[in-house]
Image (cartoon, rainbow, N blue to C red; front, side):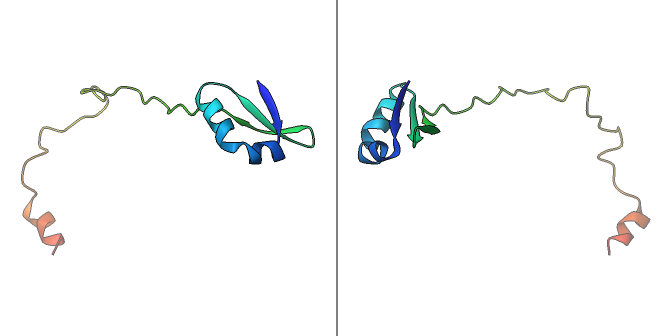
Length: 77
């Protein structure tokens, strides 16, 4: 892990980005105190989802697709 000061980081930013993208971790310090770390970005991996993920959790009643009673339909205007 390499440590550089802010002035050097500003002057050599593109070079530091290339090094970080190559796997090196670089710490940028101000007055000798570490402030940030440059490192390669890795996108988070989403868990794989498939059919049936909610099987047994959700319940569809048997009368789900039956027409609504006339009094209920009238209330919708």
